[in-house]
Image (cartoon, rainbow, N blue to C red; front, side):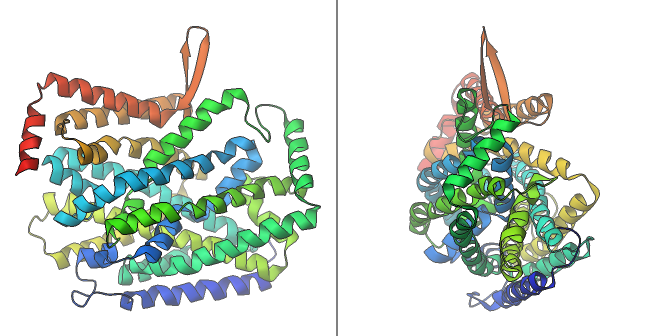
Amino acid sequence: MDGQINWTALSVFVFFFALVTVMGFWASRWQSGKSNKGQHLDEWGLGGRNFGTWITWFLVGGDFYTAYTVIAVPALVYAVGAYGFFALPYTILVYPIVFVIMPKLWHAAHKAGHVTAADVVYGRYSSRKLEFAIALTGVFATMPYISLQLIGMEVVIKALGISGELPLLAAFVILALYTYSAGLRAPALIAFVKDLMIYIVVLVAVVLVPMKLGGYGVVFASASDAFAAKGGATGLTLKSAQILPFATLALGSAMAAFMYPHTLTGIFAAKSADTIRKNAVFLPAYTVLLGLIALLGFMAYAAHIKVENNNDVVPALFNALFPSWFSGFAFAAIAIGALVPAAVMSIGAANLFTRNFWKPYVNPEVTPAGEAKVAKIVSLAVKLGAVVFILFLPTKFALDLQLLGGVWILQTFPAVVFGLFFGWFGPNALLAGWAVGIAGGSWLAYADGIKPVHTLHFGGDSYTVYTGLLALLLNVAVAVVIQLLSGGRSKQQLSADAAS
């Protein structure tokens, strides 16, 4: 981290990066359909809808647990202690939601050939306005998320002693080229390597780092002393005032997680609803991994790691305690962990643009091959936009927008999910709820200085709650009122549509 290039670590890093680059280009031949070789959006954007349990497990896990997760979760634990572990209950809550909701959503998409959540919404409600709202939210929520993957990659490139933006640009040019060529198959194949590497890195770290530092007793004692010296509402356990925001942040994040275009892309690419159910059972293994990753934040205190930027904690810990070759391996795992989600995110955004902007408003007669061509070009533009974003705008801006993105994407939950279970809501009610939820959530977040939680005051008591969940409650309340005022005509119409 002192600006001197670590050539051993860099050599290992380059080797594994080159390995996944070759895999990325080769992926265009892997499990390709018998016809339309990438010339159909189903082939390029959803891998032919033919991913089985293991491929889906690695793809969804690799897409959900990103490079920024490996960097940011320990950084948050390092900064605020126990509160940073909210990601654990969040990833526990998300899988029952996946088990119950996602098979139904897959059925709706598979039956009608839908590629995006906005497609499903239009197929259900026949409302271009509501479709446009869902698609627009997905694109805007995804862009800062891609930028965060760049931040994760920047951190490990810096840890190798390399300065300047050229390595980052080169990495994303390579990513753009093999994603353009292979589509979703590239990140699906690379996810195998990425997840295996991350598991090796984390398991080695949680065994060897405490051994080097004197055991977990020393780790927790050092962290406790450090938080006590800081003062304030931080530490190894939650303070009473943190319990409600902790719980609501976990619940709201779990509800939002699979509304993002990139996570839904992995769902729609599965070959059956049963594949999704099996993944909901097996994916919690990643939660165990996440808990171990989070512990690295405490270990940094025992290792006496001091950084100017909390995001540098994990690379600094590895540089301090491991030989250069293993640091290079770990940094390669994190960097590859940026490529997988960034690729899927760009594909998800490109699918949305193609199916829900280009096709209905620009070229309604576009062919399947034309859709694939547009999506490929848009995926390049999305990656370029993310690179420009991170190079020319402050990092905090990307973080703020990503927090807002979570609030925004949660507002699509009623339109995407409610119609799978009952037909009471009409499109106008859902659109009104979405608009109020987006506006209200954005205003609350802005008023709080772009914080994820908002404090409500009732009499002499105060309650701090996740802003996205408050906005969602407002969203649903408005939708209910508008639907009641409509006299139930939309219910009858949707029931008739379902019967036919």
